[in-house]
Image 1 (cartoon, rainbow, N blue to C red):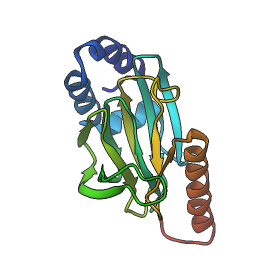
Image 2: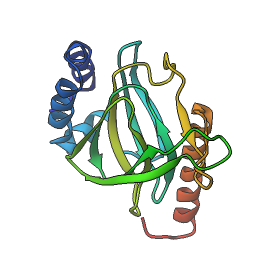
Image 3: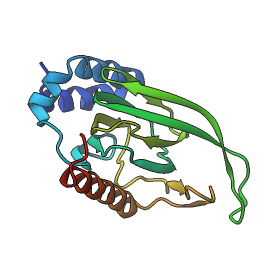
Length: 193
């Protein structure tokens, strides 16, 4: 059965062995989604919930509101994403230039993850994320570095213009708050969940 503290301790040891070792731990964790929910609680609100943060490792419980999307962004560190509830769609992007006045990304691929599935993203992958379903999606994200205080400046790209700008964690938290408010307003209005 999944135990948060044990998972974190195992990740702290495995991070020295790299992304593949973290992937194996995450696959094992989300293989039993009921155990993750029992340990972390049934997700009720969209948000970014840090479980552990250090210079070489960050573990986050991400909960995505229905139909929410997060703009294209990079991490400059590896990421392992394990889904334990719902569905997460990733759109992958590639740079096509450095012009700050014109779009400098183009779509390069996609992947859809369901419960029990894990995705691995290399340090320079650019992706955007969407929850395409009518319920909350929950995932354990493990990063090979300090997600909240990265040593290398990260980027995000405007949804509409696809122009690069500095990554803004407060904007990310705002997107989650707004998506959660829309979700709760729909529930209050009697929409199906």
